[in-house]
Amino acid sequence: MNIVLDTNAVLYFMAGRLIEPLPQANLCISVITEIELLSYPMLKSEDEKQIRQLFNNITIIDLNNSIKESAIHFRRNYRLKLPDALIIATAHFLNARFFTNDVKLLNIKEILSVSLALKNELP
Image 1 (cartoon, rainbow, N blue to C red):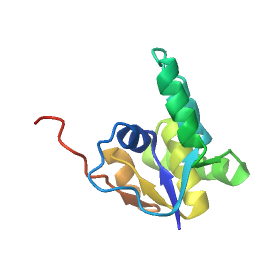
Image 2: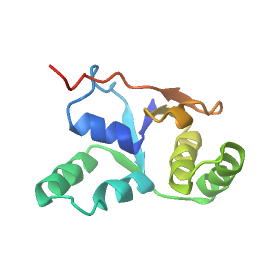
Image 3: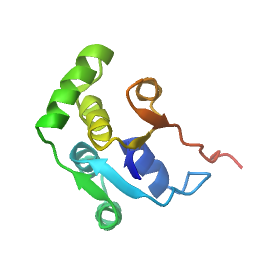
């Protein structure tokens, strides 16, 4: 089973905020998520190292023609921002479950989306 993690899902995972562990599966991210995670202006070198170590256990999916065509469809029909359309198109291409907490992305009917239960940060 393939699971594509949205950028927010990776951030929640890394911060230890997930109530349930990620399932045993082939975890994937779009190359767009990789770029988003590594391009934060205030990213500390320790955080970058942690992100890059995480990438050793995740399959990073590059763009291809199928993903591009699918992204066009999702951007047109759901009025998504380009990065979101490309990430969703990656999940669609892999016929994967998509883990996100982005409400707009959870409502895309062509994708099996899963909302993540998060730990409350307050004691």
